[in-house]
Image 1 (cartoon, rainbow, N blue to C red):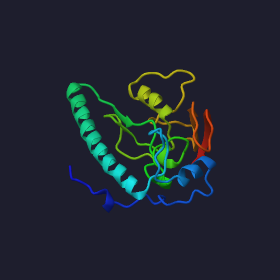
Image 2: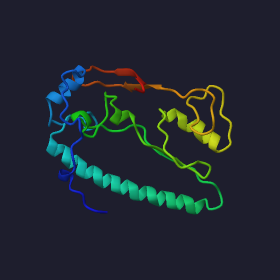
Image 3: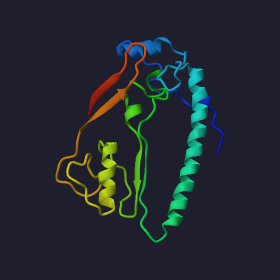
Image 4: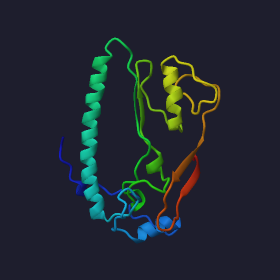
Length: 198
């Protein structure tokens, strides 16, 4: 894989965004730019140099995951030569990674954290990109339908395949439940956010 110099890549558009209108906990984080928190999993505001160091590591991780996923897919295809293979690739959350000048994911529901890749591949699916508002809860009903299994009454989510007469959703609820807090937001934190497409 080519070596990529992170200093040659543009910063995220919102890296220098003001937090004057942000909730108090984000104002506190932005006020301490360049000072990582004691807990290395918590949201923080890096300097440009810190962001570029993290970007260098992230590029390496992406290359590693790309190679590993390729090996997994090849092995799965080899093992299922005579049977249909369905592959789902997704994650539980995104990462701010410089968006709004912040890193990581806790206590924010910006698009960088809530909008994640969801790739589903299978012989019974057409190629294409779908821009509907979907949820991780939609994965189970989708896999049930793709495998010919029946869902059950009360199952959450909707199948992403097939034809439904019901209109597709234009809103979701995003929830966060943490047993801890941080400066500017005492814990435990329980937040629900109603997200509607523009």
